[in-house]
Image 1 (tube, helix red, strand yellow):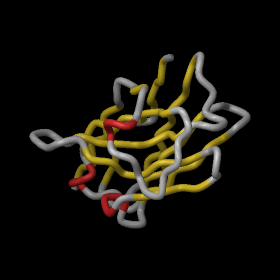
Image 2 (cartoon, one colour):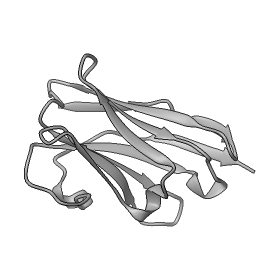
Image 3 (cartoon, rainbow, N blue to C red):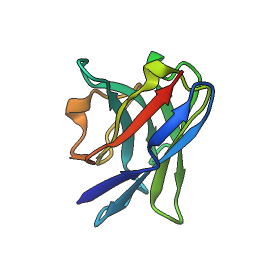
Image 4 (tube, rainbow, N blue to C red):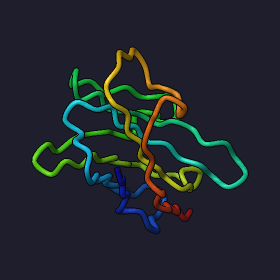
Amino acid sequence: VRLVESGGGLAQAGGSLKLSCAASEFTFDDAIIGWFRQAPGKEREGIGCIDNSEEKTYYTNSAEGRFTVSYDRTKNTVYLQMSSLKPEDTAVYYCAASTPFVIVQMPSEYEFDYWGHGTQVTVSS
């Protein structure tokens, strides 16, 4: 199973970026796909996830209402739409996937089975 993130780069504060997470040899149709980020010197933190078996999304406080997770079934790709970007959003962003299980909130990183290598997002002020 291989997850590949894309769409990272440099953005200005207040701007937007849309990250993609594509999978090979793994269907996202019934999976839970989460987005995490890790800033320099900080622990990795969860942002949000989509539970495709329930068609529900869950977010942590880190999303602040500025980030949205979505799924395109035709492309087997999950997206993280980021808006109103701030310099403190600068981090490496990872997607992770898990086979389905019951969730009522964003799972911890330890509950995900597969990870991408990450994509760098840098927000300038």
